Image 1: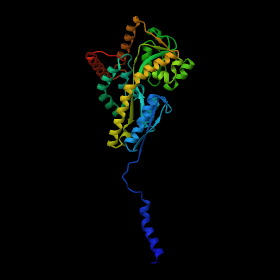
Image 2: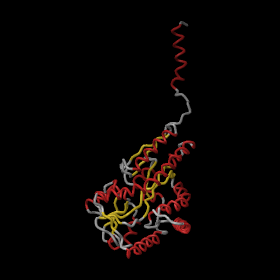
Image 3: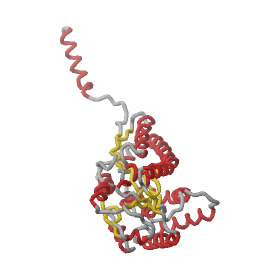
Length: 343
């Protein structure tokens, strides 16, 4: 056999091995698609982007985060639906979106249930094991809590009493007919809209007011159409970063630990920064013409009574009794130990 034939035979022997990719054991990179309503460029969006950078760095590029902000993937019920069919793997949701997964999260939607951030964080810590378990039963994993500020009513005209509020058309999140009916049963005029339709709803007169946080009202410019902010707050806007259990299970245990540590840092940053951001937002909106609607002292009891009525009616119909009862017990325990402080 001459040299030419020898080389040809050698190449034919090596060809099958060349066609087989090398077995390096390396895990294919995981891209987590995350959708949210938070506006692009907002403090929440910046924290999510930083979280994505940390995931890439701390997992050696094995996990990355692709963010779809500003409602481009739809309203929160749409986002949850897309997670269930696998189009999305993750979401940063408010209590409205979390409530479409499990009713237990609607406990955070009860008006005037909490008096301070300290009280919220205490009760949230006690409820977390129960809420995580309920989420996992629905195929979702809680990565961290999100905080969006303290909700106030923003309206076209001043609202100083409960009766004033009953005279206007109020935004209520579309998709939860029970909440719409709850508002109606209490004498209010709810209008169900997707969150992505709020601005057009205000501009066309479909709604005259909405419950939202100062930071959101400023970021999305809603305050320009609803220039009166009720001084009395309704509730903290609680949210959470979640991922489907299917996507989470594809990530190694070691990388899960690193990702959760990054999520914890993001949560701590939100706890520190959002209350101050809310205060700055109020100051900025006041400079731009917003006015405070001060609740009349004689009306405070009426506001509280209406909130208590919501809580009673939501127990068992919207919020699982055992979850609400646990929240009430832990809130009572906090108030007994409280020595002072406020939001």
